[in-house]
Amino acid sequence: PILAVFAQCPPKMPCQEILDSHYLGICAIITVSQQLLFFIIAAGFKFDKVTDFAGGTNFVVLALVTLFLGGSYFLRQILVTVAATCWGLRLSGYLLMRILKTGKDDRFDALNRGFSLEFAGFWFGQAMWVMVVSLPVIFLNAQCKKDPEMGVTDWIGLAIWLFGFVVETIADQQKFNFRNNPDNKGKWCAVGLWSWSRHPNYFGEMVLWWGLFITCSAVFFKETPGLWVAVLGPLFITVLLLFASGIPPLEDSADQRYGRQAEYKEYKESVSVLVLLPPSLYRALPLWVKATFFFEFPMYSRGLQEG
Image (tube, rainbow, N blue to C red; front, side, top):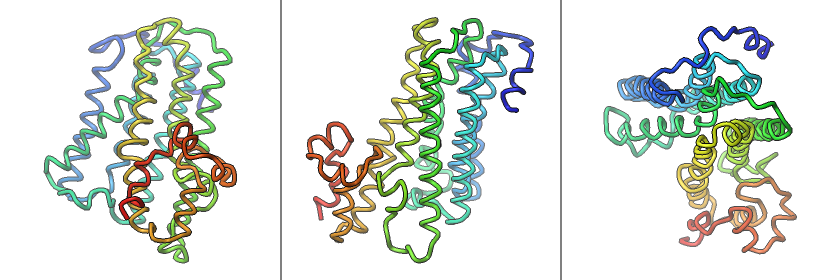
């Protein structure tokens, strides 16, 4: 039904150029405006219940706006836009539900939630995250004259996206259920996918964005080679989660809370930090293999080393 709706949309004004031919200008204006609006709301009321919701929905807005501005509605564009929209709606809805349940976001405990530079810095970073990660979708939808035939690579990319989407969705729900069970208070989550990966939700998120880039790549490399810079999208989310605001602070926090427990140390040695692997297999791998191929960097155990 969703595809049918898009397919019936007539290309009223195809290839209309607004500020620039790739819609980067209009997308930047939309993103800054949306994040600024939610920053004013959050800072004015000094609460953080709309932060992640503002980010997730921003992806949806950019995907839909660029598709309708392009007006060509090629199958590849429709599929990628639907995929990005489903991801954005699912993530923003889940994070909004979670924050309403927990009451606050611990990430901002050390920040002034009012009109401060440190709180504004978060919103600036979120705007950058949305823009950079959305590049493959933005550039694809802006290519309204060139539409290479869908091939095996496109469907492989969509299959990879679907796999990542399912993994992230299941992982989020499993952890949400675990945290909301009073019997699990004071325990780390090691159920379901979390028994095969310490961060399966991040693994799914990285995978799905690489999948969308693969599907977009036919247009980028065959028709408009200059758009290869869209690889910055999945690369940015990968680097962000591996080295910045994703895995490192969570590993540090878990090490501080559970690092003195022998069971926790065994858990870290047996469960992959990111890629889904059976614990029996991962435990048997040499440390250099874990670090080289499965992202088990020393920085993820610095809390244990310091302890």
